[in-house]
Length: 87
Image (cartoon, rainbow, N blue to C red; front, top):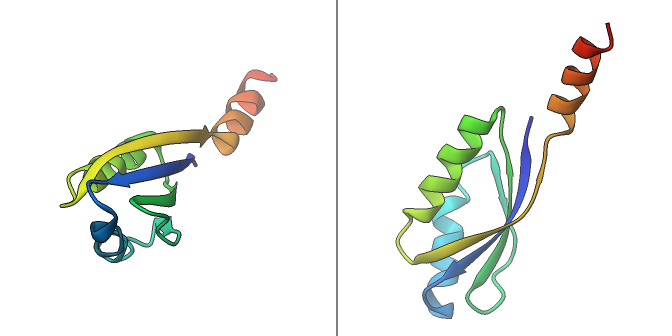
């Protein structure tokens, strides 16, 4: 279950609140309060493909300029891989 931390940069600080409201409807996302033209966000997805789909949808949202991926955490996937290979 990958979790990724993002900083979403909007074209303008005046668009940040609208972008936040637009993407908050996705329950797989947690979006923090805007700070100037940036929004902190966390994606909690079921798999890598779902994480990419959410990331791409955010990027296509009106007002979004780019997304910085701050971290990606794959703990559950790593645990399952370790258990399978432990023999």
